[in-house]
Image: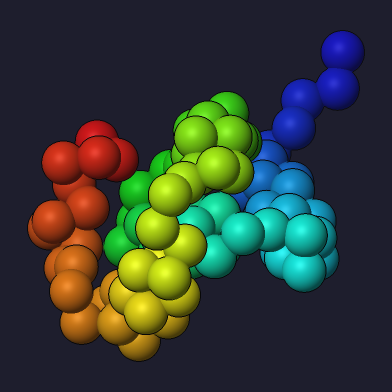
Length: 92
């Protein structure tokens, strides 16, 4: 049995997330918000599972107001609107 260190699992998770980012051209604006919020949550010290991210991506694939996601989904806008404490509601 091979044990995987916590740092390797974190790297593995980041690699998965990076893979999703590479597919960014295929994502809708609202799906990109999912990825950006997950990135920000991880910067705040929360763990975002691949399953949580995939659920968000699936739910936002056909979101009605893609324009609102374009306007509010920039990383700087997300950081201005959400604090790490705000994210705690979603990523405990």
